[in-house]
Image 1 (cartoon, rainbow, N blue to C red):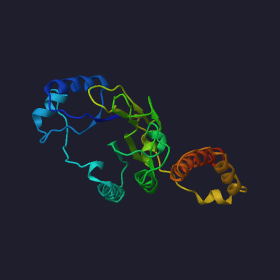
Image 2 (cartoon, one colour):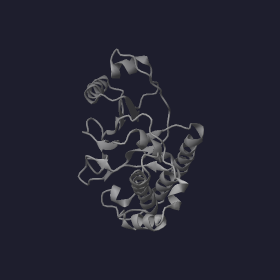
Image 3 (spheres, rainbow, N blue to C red):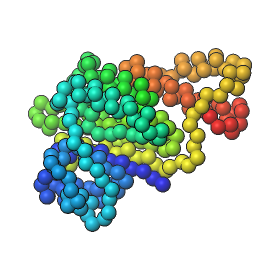
Image 4 (tube, rainbow, N blue to C red):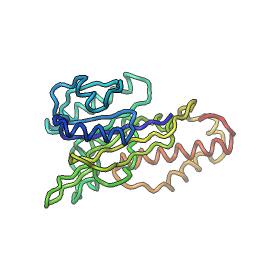
Length: 256
């Protein structure tokens, strides 16, 4: 089973012509799940859904939302609400869309300093143990298309660590932009791996001579750049992969 999720800030879906163009794109992309933001439609009903997906039956939901224009306090409340997801459901989960904030200065054209919101987003990602994959297909997901260009990566997917255990070839990429100042982004999960076990630290590893020195050697060899939280999260991910590989080589196929 392959999983493909598309997220797109469409900047309005009131016009019938625009909905028809989006419908044609949905057919072309063939996603399993679509996230549409800023539709500018006060009420989503079955007629609107049919205009986007045709006559096929689809499951859908509509949620009112408020973005960063409501202020930093609203964004912090959003992080706190999302932080509760892990305690609500003990399942793999992902969240995607227009976060209206970047993580690093490099994600905004011409920026070279951190804002208050940047570490807040990175801390949320680190505290929840989420993965934020590099964006393929381009650097930025939004542009104002004016003479003085403004560009930023405002859109992204974040997913729980065990998501990658189930979808080991997962990738995140930008696709062609049409009728919006935002690029659509796609989370392509690849093939679902059934029966994958969550990563576990095995006490028997500590009994292997030189284990601690080996871990330190791996850790020092990882070259990761960015904010401290980004470096830590990605080095832990690399360490997990080395531990799983080493576990098979030394102890055989003992699940870790």
